[in-house]
Image 1 (cartoon, helix red, strand yellow):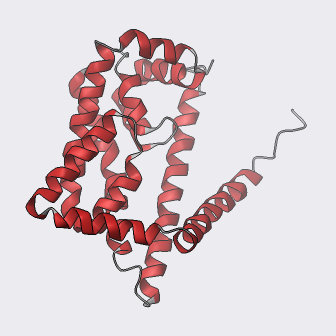
Image 2: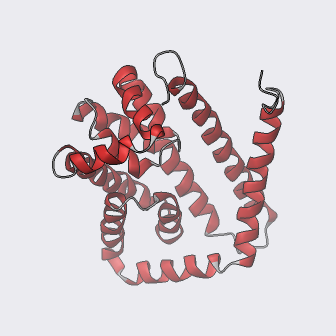
Amino acid sequence: MDKTSRPAHTRPVQTWAAMAGAAALAGAAWYLLPVEEGLRAFSDWANGLGPWGLLAFGVLFFLATLLVVPGTPLTIAGAVAFGWAVMPVVLVSATLGSWLAFVAARTLLRDRVRRLIERRPALNATVEAVGDGGWRLMTLMRLSPFVPFNAQNYVLGVTDVRTPAYLVSTVIGMLPGTVVCVYLGVIGRHAGSDEPTHWITLGLGLLATLAAVELTRRRVRAKLEGGRVGVR
């Protein structure tokens, strides 16, 4: 046994400590950085567009998906501006952007994506795992940040997965995270309130999100490092 390895029973403690620290950092960022002001400014701008606001946001989210820009902050900002109405816009825009990135990786960008994958063992293992584990593993990967969601669109494009299975796993995989992010954004609309209920709910939501992410990440890593697929 490697002397530098940590006992297995200490890992959950470290994981929960890291998640609590991440939640604390998020709270500190809210207080110390102009996060609230930025969200309010974005909300004012989006609502100032009137009925075109949601359409403009959908186009912005579509482009962000193609450009591998993280969608979580944008989803939360959209929820602050539009509330629950933003959720179908996010789902449709992300699905369209993911599909176009998938097609681009299979055609115009195939050689470039392959070269990138060859230089990164984690991405290479991802490609092998999907080919071995099918749509179930692909859906789990969509739920996990083991590889960033928007980057997966291009990585999965060079696998043998069929387009219908890709689209189904994409929608299923993004739905839980989208619901959580929109919920946090809706709660964040009232974060300036003095009522402690808003802060308690927001904190519990963050912890639940981090816990779900960690549990899914472990499952994906276990599959990647299991007998079927070796991480190179």
